Image (cartoon, rainbow, N blue to C red; front, side, top):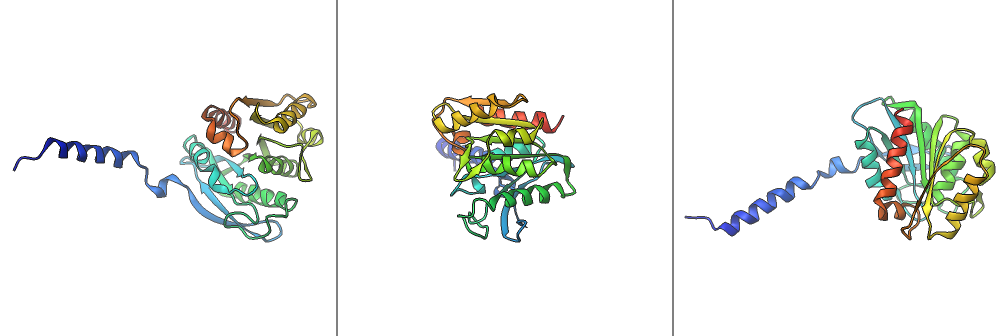
Length: 240
């Protein structure tokens, strides 16, 4: 019996689609659990670079969001040779604790840095922090208290996020460590924050502006050029 040409076309299209879809186990890292400095249970997703020991980065999400927001960026970091750990802050995602305790979240980030830096497959001399919106404030504040943090990136930062102040004094305390700041030109408060942090700093800071009207991790998702610039900056700073 002779097969119809249309059937071959459907089978070929299905084969191509199957090849194009990555296996779920390879695409999203693996879940881990760690404890904050006060014992609060934190959920994380670990994306390990193939070649180890590798530089590593902790990724900190926005308020009312979760570690899942970082999946695409974390996979790209993993592909570029950087291990990434995305965490759920307390009261978010699968972590314990209260989502209203913003000040206590700084210790969540500090704990994540210590946990990641202590892994045998991670270079403790090449650890970075990346945060978005609330996560940007937490990343900068945690970096001040963690000298082993070599670089920090803040997407859509705030001088004062509900009492969490990450202003010019924080920039001064970070000294000559590498800092990357980014926001949308359509995000007035973040734009003002970025300008104040860079203009008042005695050390040059790297900055990126996007014309896409979005905030935090949503800005990175909406502007692939900005996301690529962040990955490139981390790659240059941590693998050098």
